[in-house]
Image (cartoon, rainbow, N blue to C red; front, top):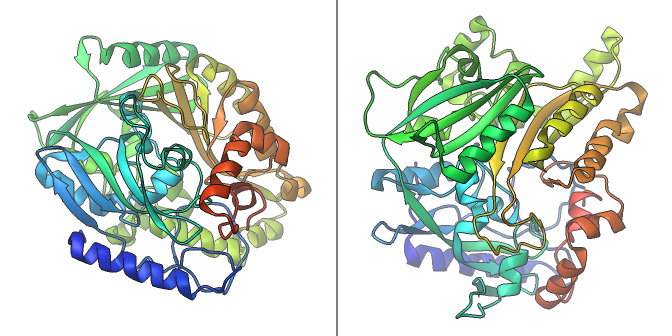
Length: 464
């Protein structure tokens, strides 16, 4: 159920947050007291006292007329959408997993099928309140031609900083109108070059074969079997919308159908029910097991907890050893490559890694002059996010992460970038070059002079 806090409750929650900051001993690191996470980066355990964000998980207010919402940083997109959909509105980008928080998607990176026209979640933020490492809450706004922007340096550097520059307590975001239904077309391509040309056509024109396209993503099942799913918001349907929360599985429908209709709600969470296709690791693609698995447990956060349990107990590793199988390396990454280099990346990926399916999501920065130094994509360039999540048997080298290191190197040879929600292995010089470490250090010094917040490099690479 959506949590509606209101302004008085929000101010009280911020007061509690600041009080918890004051209780952390001077010189001790500042972290969230948060039990759940959508990250796949291990980090060192700590028993230190953390920031109390328990009252910062709701929607403060929605201005339907101006199509904006004031939202607390720990509010999940599931609850945010529950609040906006009754107004016929959604955030400009709704990441595909329900429990991703708005603050997390902005300080990290979020992406979904509207990213080809709306960019990334941080690009629709109008202003945000940020708790800095110095223990102050400042309101940050973007710099514009007629307004230098208050704390504009923090605003611009915040995306992809993962808490190393502070934590958002409130974000004012833009919303867009949507319909009740979504019509889908699944278009097959025989090779990635053909798909890339189709992506460029849709991004430039907003259409495909004369029909408007509101959402765009795809799946590469095999080298000769790739699909783009073209979504169009619609008020009418010839039949009842499909339901992929029961026996049927959404990603399989892409291969089985050329057209489909979903409710807007189900479209937004179409990937969450089966965690894309990763629910198969728990047997949920077997109809008999699926019938016994309660629907309320068919959610990405449940699967994430099971993966975390396995990592703590080493269950799969023990089973592999018992069966004589080589040790696995976990390969869980999202990368962006320019659309014209997508065929090169997929050809290399098939030969070097051999993991399929691969999710494909086109994106282009929303602003022509956009500058986000901590994740410097080129304005005016179309990228394709490639997401792949699973394991590869590599043997005794698993601890050295050979596949992940090779992916990092290949992505940047192709002029791409890698999200940091999962493990990273860069040396410090390479990391600073790719994510503008000099700018991060300058902004961090201004807002965290006593170095209370863990640096981005230490979080992403050193696992602190």
